[in-house]
Length: 116
Length: 247
Image 1: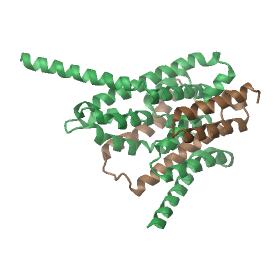
Image 2: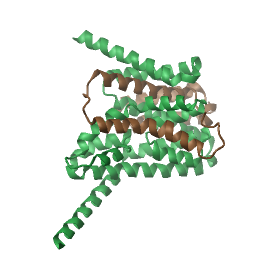
Image 3: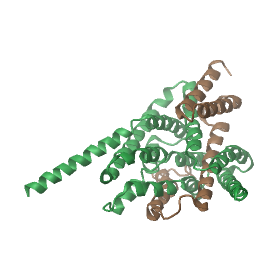
Image 4: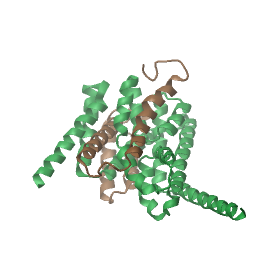
């Protein structure tokens, strides 16, 4: 029952509908239905947001530490260094995303160019 | 009769103008950053063995990039359908409070419910940030129209971007592919930090960054779930302790 376990052409699309569309639009529709009845600063929302944030952060961590494709052959230290310095540049520039992203990419490319 | 026709005509014109203004909002710096991270996502999906049709379909039907990245990460790990669905469901919880915050900004007393349900599909980090910032300057009766222009344009543009990257990705040198694959984590690293409402969000993010790779080694079948639940619970406990200390 995995994504790649069937040869049927429609299986991946069904998989996307069930595990992707239902799993996301369920929350969006619930958001409309509740329409602001839940209190913005309530403790339950803090917990909900913390779990969601940690989950997405775990994905980010895995994408940097265990990447796929062409990124997989680059050294781990270079990826972590580029991400850390990019993040520092983001914080240092007053949280400007573009500065953080460009810095990380520049360091990664420089590292690859220098033959790390 | 002629009057009604003219006024109908005028109102259609007005709606079209605000729809187009919303669409123009997609071509902004946050929109550009989003496109660049969809370039990264397309590279990621292609690398995982997802076909171009599936990736474009996923972009339109799921839309939220964090959920899509979780989805691709989970299918890549060979997770079963229920496990993938659970991981994506957890990653998408954040959409609910976002929609709840956006709906009161967007509707007026005459907005039909179904319009809100349809438009809620467009909610993801970028369109939400843009809408929360710009809707205040849009006349209330035109806000759903404006958001439809903004949200639908962002989705359409990025579906095209994904298709184009699929066509080009094979001919790219490996350093460029590596740089593209780095875009997604960097986009989330910065946007996630910036969107945190309270300190607990930052604590949760740091814990998730460390626990994700750790559980990937310890518990490969359920790494995301374990990192999310444990990291989130610890961050929440920290939040409560700080509140109690302050009280």
